[in-house]
Amino acid sequence: MDGECFPPLPQTTRKGRCTQGGGLKGQSDEICEALIADLHDGQDPKLLRAELPEELECPGKGRVLGVRDEERARRKLRKIALPIPGGTEDMLQMRTIPQPRLPVPVSEEKSVLAYDVGGSHVSAAVCFGSDYRLGPVVTAEHPGEETAVAFVAMLHRIGTEAMGLAGVESVLGAELAVPGPFDYANGISQMTHKMPYLFNLDLRGALASRFGWEPGQVRFLNDAAGYLLGEVGAGAGRGFGRVVCITLGTGIGSGYAVNGRVAKDGPGVPPGGEIWDQPYQGGIVEDAFSTRALQAAYKKRTGTVKEVAEIAQLASTDPDAAAVFAEFGQNLGVALRAILAVFDPEVVVIGGGIARSWQLFLPLAQAEVKGTKMELRLSERMDQAPLVGAGVAWFTHA
Image (cartoon, rainbow, N blue to C red; front, side, top):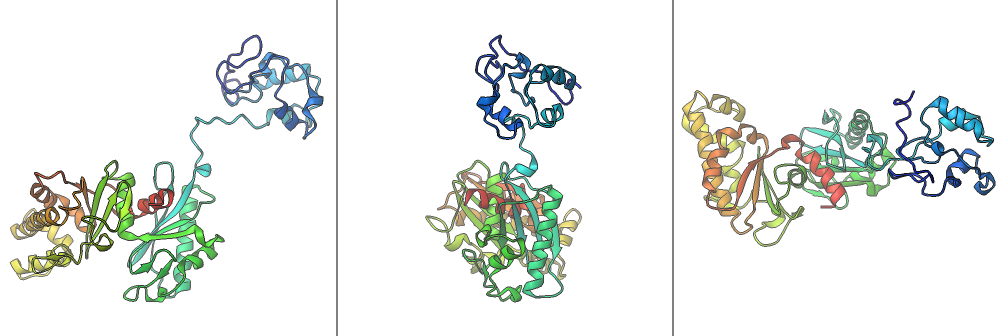
């Protein structure tokens, strides 16, 4: 059994001192009173003093009283005339000395449920606080029954499933990345254009009730801020002091971070950190950098309307498709250089659905910001960034 259940003993001196840490530091006639009391069901350890054999004195390195193997344990215990409740079996099954340097079991590591609430579906995963890694992601479409009760039940179901898949029995709470308008401090939706059945609902209280939690265990943040924090905490913006995250999709999302925290105001930061409605070329930024902008540019060249994914697929053989993305990239670089000049970020992370076709436009955008300290980087976390960011927000209170 030696080498399986019982690792090798730490070395001990003749006086019984452990030379590898974690053992008893007394003389050979001293015993670990707490352990003896544990074996004797709480009796006064001072009444149970006895001289222990040297092998039983040093509990270091996770050993059961330093015992080398079961047979040796039995021999030594026979020499110690102590009435052990249940006999030697209880001694052998006694808990081991904890080892602080061993990896923390998943079930004991601090974790939180992270949600990404989108316009058509919701994703959930357990986020672990030590390194912001995610457990398996569970995704569900919005319920067919468009009611608050059905929506909260769906959140509870996928959250519970995510915990099970991650091997976690309990979490500290939940952090939800949710689009606006939303009262993030109080957990109340102000949306009417999407998910209208949640309007004015106390989502914090409703979800906390389903999990049996206190309301304070459910928190919310803006989905764009979640994406930003995911990249700042565990993605392309990690290790930088001034970061901007741009998400390109049906619209253009943005977020600013300073020293790991979301910045909603300050020099160079637009109101709420949002650039979508900033003036640009006679319109606003979102008019030029969104799926509809790419579609409009392609239609202008070809007279046909296609989805952005289709245009990207055609780029290798269709000069018009390639040109549309090239112009998009050049314009994006010029716009970011001007809009972000005052904030002066070290890194700008580009994500969102359009970023899946990054090779068609990002190099041209990068060329336009040369000569500045601004570096354009592709998102590392992509679709999982809001989930990671929700975890980062929980553990850092960013």
